[in-house]
Length: 89
Image (cartoon, rainbow, N blue to C red):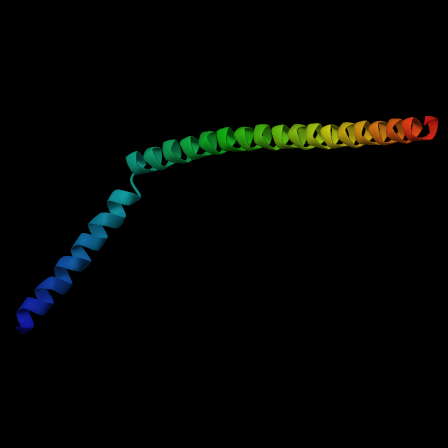
């Protein structure tokens, strides 16, 4: 039982050492660089889409405010014209 535990421990150390060497190789660094570049490109696309959505939301908000202002003005015109008709009678 003691040798099995030591064997697992030594195997883990060996595997860890080989993994560190593999992860720090030039080929691995190229992969990390390309992956990072892809993430940065994706970030740019997401930020551009978010900016477009934000601009569209601002336009929708301003249009909605204008619709409400027009509706209020129209209701006031109707109210004024109803009062004028009532005073003529």
